[in-house]
Image 1: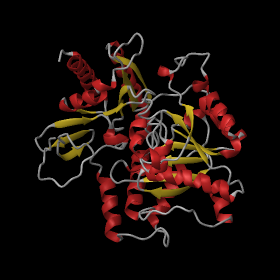
Image 2 (image 1 turned 90 degrees about the vertical axis):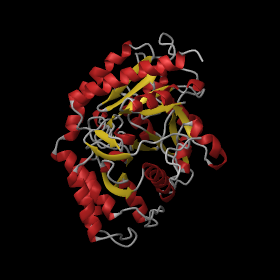
Image 3 (image 1 turned 120 degrees about the vertical axis):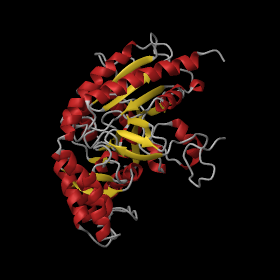
Length: 450
């Protein structure tokens, strides 16, 4: 076991690797203590949408922190939380107009699913208690969020602590029998969701949670045009609350504030995180309509979920500043425009033998790696292709987000890209060039005789 800083008291997630020490960042770049520059191709963990070094956001955080350290959300309101709720309600689709701010995506998923459960209990339907989710998928690492996730390598150690969740196959055209070409299979139409609801019993299902555009588990898979309209209709007919997990895809990442906007449907509950504060502070939010919240208001009068740092003034101030910055600089529109450039350039990677598919929307892209392109056969898990690729890319000055093990047998490798919205065409050229070289170098390394 190695440790770059043997005297460090930091408990890192990866216990056997060396971590470059980042000293500063600006725009789309990070700089370490040796002067090396890294192009932030993944926005950290999909959070850096406005770019590094935005002084307006830093000043908003400082100003709020200097005025007040903490006021409990159980006892007080304040200008920052009121303004954040106004800003999020202003850009949210349909009737989503009440906002419960929290600190992380996992917290928000946990709260959203608890809200769905409490809604049915206070509506006089306590038998509706089951959560439904898609496979593969990822919704967080707290226990209910982890239960909803379909990532077996994360769950094995905690199996006895997790609850059972109803599963339906996710839209994943690259791995579906139809390959996303009509006539579509039941996974790609959404019919598999209705079949699972009927099999389980609609009277028992409280909520379906799903990512509008795939996250890292399906590598930015984009559903067919009619998919979400079909799912919305299914949920309405069977009285199942639709929870849109937009922690990764929201706040403009796919070129619109909500990734559901192009489909013209409104979920019953939306979960936001990551980009709503640009990475400057941890911030997430549950966004719900009054038709859901009012059931609780007329009943118990209390949402049975509390977090010490919910509604936190400094975090909310960062969110307000970020959303205003996005709007003032037209960065969501820029994301849509630069997304077209990114995906056009990424198409060049399709000629690489180990790139099976390239997909996504806006400044979100997934590149799936395969050992055999003609059959789509993945690399054996022992090769650890995605992890090796990410390490190689980092050595070359590019950060990506690797993902592995998304397939049912534990295989599967892909890398995600989610650069800041301020990225320009020259930086996109740099990103794609480095990405391609890193794939070639990784493939050469894993195929070399040992």
